[in-house]
Amino acid sequence: MIRRLHASIHSWVSRRRASLIAARHRIKSDGWWVTGRSPLIVNRGSMSFAKGVHLRSVRSPVWLTTARGGKISLGENTFVNEGAQIYAAYSVEIGPDSGIGDNAVIQDTDFHQVNEGDKARVRKITIGRNVWIGRSAIIMPGVTIGDHAVIAAGAIVTRDVAARAIVGGNPARPIGEVRCGDDFKRT
Image (cartoon, rainbow, N blue to C red):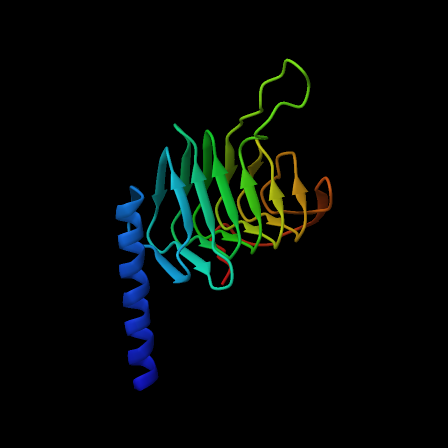
């Protein structure tokens, strides 16, 4: 009984803290929560978190940044683990029921030119439903990841990933396939 009461109070405090953070940083939200430290947020564009989004920042904070005009959208029940960094100069959309591993990096820009006369590359990132992105994976600008895909730990994703594909390596290449129905959700 006491343990259940403690969990209920902890959940209420986490959600209350999240609503205060959302108000301070102009985040449109529908009931998200934070575990551990407050995330590091710089919102010069727009952010929206659907119901059930969970940011875990126990040892190191989650970093969320939008440039002027940039947009981050986290779908329902998305989990972002500690140390993960999401940066949007244009747009990063993450579908519902997805999991982002600790220290993963998702950025829709290269931040700088590669060749003389070039501009920094800025391309939308779209991550589907029920996608699992492993620890320290990097998702580069312009990538689309299909529903139910798995990105292995440490993978560097430079190209689109098909639905239900398992990819790994640098650059990431297909290494397997997820066998699941359309209604499958990871727990």
